[in-house]
Image (cartoon, rainbow over all chains, first blue to last red; front, side, top):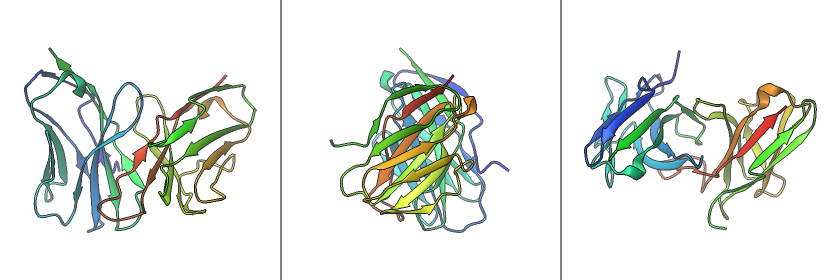
Length: 115
Length: 116
């Protein structure tokens, strides 16, 4: 079974609008962390946001927020006020357990922001 | 430099040859990871170092792949008898320590390996 599922291969959003990128995960470990990374065409993976399984509140980092629904095993990324520079691949990832960051990545969503 | 540095940025090699890919992590980062990213896929974990030792090499696909980090800083991923299926982008990442909240991994820009 896939540990991280991203069902949207590609998404379009109008500049200045908000967009939600979906991510569901599968784990039986009560302790885990969820990450979102951005990968522009240059290839570098850029960390965006982190949510721990025991965190009571949804994580936010500037224009990024993580809609964490634990019972549904969902960790969607919300980008508000999209900018042209947001066009990139976005990967959801999960670390199981409290240890080191061996993370499992999803297949990614390609976001294109339209002027 | 300030970030994770990987060299070379591109490598083309013939099938059957040996290659080495280098990763220079952020100074002071004890944890180092290698990932492989095939076209259209997310990165796939290969190996994790904590200091000089490989704490988890469960992602290495077979015994043609080997990685070292002799002084706890620079790491080299070594691939013997390369095959066309090894063609991918090899990503290196480092983090200040292994676990916990603030252990986001900082990635390099990768080495694109092409086996012809």
